Length: 275
Ligand SMILES: NC(=O)C1=CN([C@@H]2O[C@H](COP(=O)(O)OP(=O)(O)OC[C@H]3O[C@@H](n4cnc5c(N)ncnc54)[C@H](OP(=O)(O)O)[C@@H]3O)[C@@H](O)[C@H]2O)C=CC1
Ligand SMILES: O=C(O)[C@@H]1CCC=N1
Image (tube, rainbow, N blue to C red; front, side, top):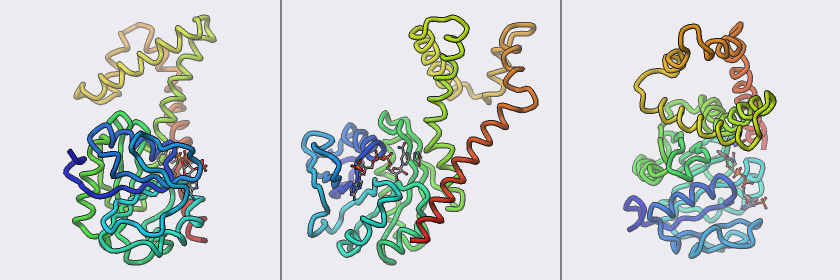
């Protein structure tokens, strides 16, 4: 069965952590590996059996290919001049590059290119990711719908109306898993500092975050209310929450964290448009 009824060839240019996670999920949900070519000079083996691996772009690209840009934003100036002459109508470019706008991609790849800009995150590997999607009016609407169907097995796909919000959304969802991983680590570290065995603390922190996330998703109540429900009157939780909440410092710290990530996106955007 082709993935979501799509029978296009898939070309992945750069297949590291993020594009690799997308590919893993696509293969798990029915993408035929024989339809996939990965172009990645850094790889010594294809990411999965049946996938073709090239160390450089081929002389020609299939006319109806889905072309995923999985390189770092800093590699675009090297890749774009080689890719641009190979592009033709009917292909879809899907870019996962942080801080590179659709206009920036068109300037690099050609004005007539159909481009869908997405921001995935690594939990897509489990079908539990978030994938923000943006396309402008120059991209064929049918191709955008096709891209959206292709992304559906990755998790929550949300179409973004204003590209100006993309860097902030990237800070929340693209970078978000790293922030959550750090929080899990911090929970475990705190318990270890106060006397728990490190392995046990890591195990218990992980299971607590997994359970709390699952409950938050299906509870039908906002997380703030769920937190209050854990905090029994006169009990332990409130004492802990009061430390986090003092003077709004936890919210302030996370706002600072997200601002820093968002601002780096804006900086990457400026660097990309400066060429
Ligand atoms: N990591 C994440 O969680 C997320 C990343 N992104 C975006 O994904 C993109 C990739 O990030 P990430 O996966 O972390 O990075 P990686 O370094 O893991 O992946 C990039 C891959 O591209 C390869 N590459 C470098 N130059 C070329 C080239 N000229 N042609 C083809 N392949 C090339 C790299 O090889 P080599 O290692 O040899 O350089 C590497 O395998 C970035 O644009 C980032 O903004 C978006 C959302 C989340
Ligand atoms: O750190 C980065 O720039 C990329 C984009 C979002 C997650 N990783």
